[in-house]
Image 1 (cartoon, helix red, strand yellow):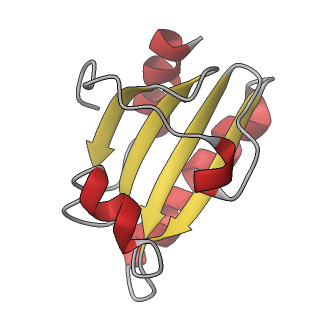
Image 2: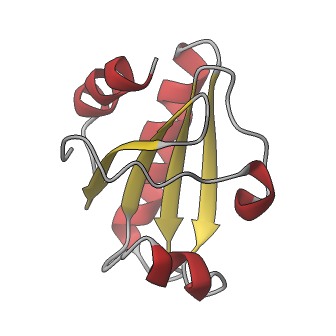
Length: 108
């Protein structure tokens, strides 16, 4: 997962879901993306293990406004948001569970 991002902030209304109390894992996916399904399982597992962490999956094709604004170039792309909705980490491709847990350390 890539280091500190530009501090872009996302609101719950933009995501269509509540932010986690401590952090939010935002996943951009597309319909025919096999790595997206595996990423969904990894992020759901991590969100279930770490109190106060939410997982939000966004259909990239349905949210081109966010895709363009956040410069999402491929799916899956995962953003780690802190409690205030600020992007602190991002990664493209299927992440490993250990990398996601480590990235959460920067958000909480």
